[in-house]
Image 1 (cartoon, rainbow, N blue to C red):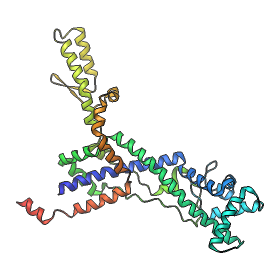
Image 2: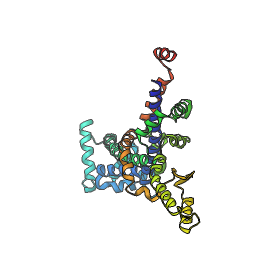
Image 3: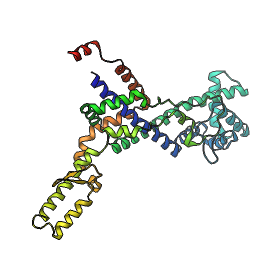
Image 4: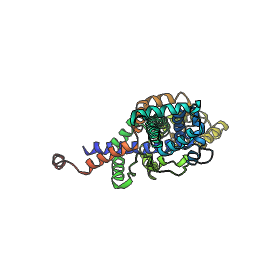
Length: 354
């Protein structure tokens, strides 16, 4: 039972580290592409129609972001103040403002009855904006989920994180299994990823750079020891060795053939020089043994097909798992660590003594 728990803890910890890497990459991509600002701009465009461009030029809105950029967050009361100011500058029948006036009228009639006072207009606009932002948040989450899946694919393939292979390594290697479980319990576990929260909608926010927006503040990157931990149980080493075996077998056959008659002959010396400079093979006695060095161009030949076929299902499991997010795997890992920390049951202790 404890062996199985340690395997599960190890797999969950690998998922957590990979998910943290994906989260960091997601935030970088979202910042580099200005994803939040673009998604918000799309929502504002649907709300205000022809008035949207003028809205973004309004001083209240322009000061929420760096010069030349669009804000990634707008408080509801700032939105209503800016829109009311713009409406005051347009005549009652202006086509550019008619879309907004119609929306305000409908909301006012639903909430407070007919009224023309400023407070009713502001309340209607803030309610309209808040409802629209719920929809915009859904757009952003869906786009970010697509990015998450794409990043998960890249990360999984880059480190060859095959779930079935990870389980096999942990199950067959008590040393690796115990080491990872002990590292997790001794404090290698990173702080819990916190769901990003927007600031108080009623409090103004200072201009923020898209690279470090308010939503990024709760995101923790992977711990410094992550590469060492991952390197113990994931990677391409075993596959590189299998791919290099063909190269080593070819070189050994060539050496045996060229050097069969005369070791000092030019063809033999040439074959020996090739072996001496070949990092994919090492000499052990009279044999050439494959190393885990990168196979170079051989990696992109037909030899890759059986390797990819053997890993496909395990890769899919890993991609699905890390797409669930770092917070999910943090909580899951903590549950299993707590169970493991309670120790074996009385029945298991009796069986061990017997």
